Image 1 (cartoon, rainbow, N blue to C red):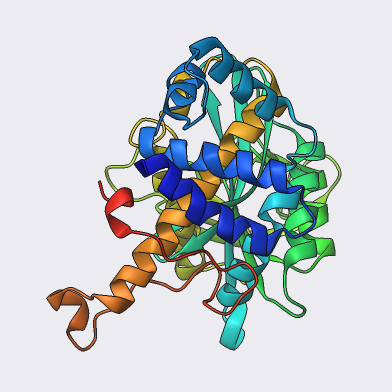
Image 2: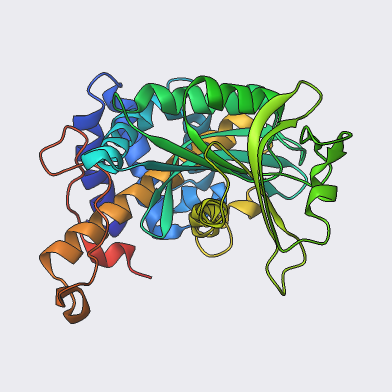
Length: 351
């Protein structure tokens, strides 16, 4: 039995247990695609199709098989990801811990943009929900709200959330949504956002940051709609631009530095793109098909994270055995969860 088939069998076992209502044929095909993705780490559908352990030897039939899977309306990313993301969020929130979410966008050339909400796990992040749209433009609040509402529905009751978002995203509507649902936030602002400190004429966030290394302002009105927030400004030596951070809490240096939690999403995007699955070279032009391709990549990522955790627990390195060293953060399905993955083999996910 080949490597891809072995991987697919283990992934299928996990998917079938987590998604009992999804058609078995869809589960089986998705597992094959995930196994091929782990093995090939490529967004090229021709290369990916060539790795599929199908009975046919004809390449055109393999490619047709994969195209049908990427067009399958039953393959909805939120539906497939729900049991795994619910489990991940529950683990992140246990013992009263704050759930650290990051929202960011990456462009795939000039063809497509991908908006992702991810969960911080240690120094990295795992994707929870995403949306693709044609063109390189910033994805607006309607799509942001759809993703945030999905994550909110999966959060355990009473969970405390801190959302970090880059300066491409702020809008009065986004701040209104965050504040309505009681989430903490650290949102970076551009320098052209209108601001009213209540101590003079309306200005911009860039003018407020001009010539200062640190500045902290409470109850600042942003945008023409007058959305109220607190601002922290930090411009460290050697950095071309200041951090202008809107926040829900009293502004301070420590609160501004909380925004650094967002950087955990960068290694995840590296995994999706140049350092991992090379998503940027995908030739898909349809947003729904790209979203399903990202689903295959995300499941491959979750599977490898799960394998790595099991390996760290079962066979810790000498450094991991030392007192005081952090073990691999626990994330994803627990061993007795309905969303648990089969342990698998750590070798197939090694760099």
